Length: 226
Image (cartoon, rainbow, N blue to C red; front, side, top):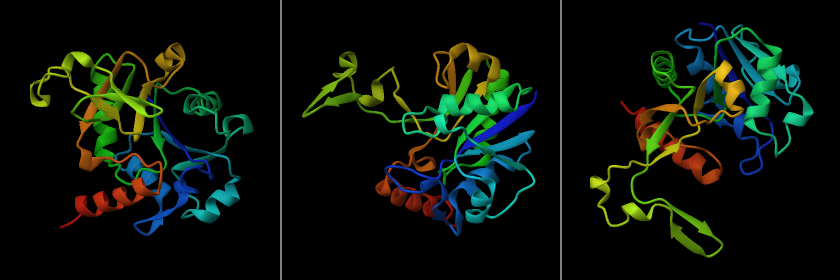
């Protein structure tokens, strides 16, 4: 099996400006994702898909890495309403011949190589189209519209959370392992036939804003204390 790693890394971010290249633990945060992805030799190639020219990318990271190819994304796939699926498919069309692809987020300070490897084993051994890391959130799922909040799953409202047979998970936004032929069929990274590896709340933190960034720093420090 031939595996491709793809890291989407636009320079600009609306809610947390320049988040993919902010310094975290002494290096641009994207370098953490690259280094963890490369640890076990899981990938034949790692592509960084960005809206920058190569020289600009290298000037704000740690320089040219032999295991990484920088790919300049098409303008139509760098807009705010562009999807990660569209950006990923552009890379797959430019680099054909792979069986599996792992789409990895650039701003990913709690990512560990063993998570990527564990998810690949699930994808390889089980009959899933996609495998992701997910976190059990517990409690009851609600949604809000304007000033009102409502339960989504009324059936479990009267059941203690520890007694619920239905478990609720959230996509933690680290990476997505996909079988490429199924990716073309499903036309989406997320699909119905999806497996997962479970991470604890301390092992993950999706970063959308400055508050998430501070929480991630605290978790990183706690997870790496000796």
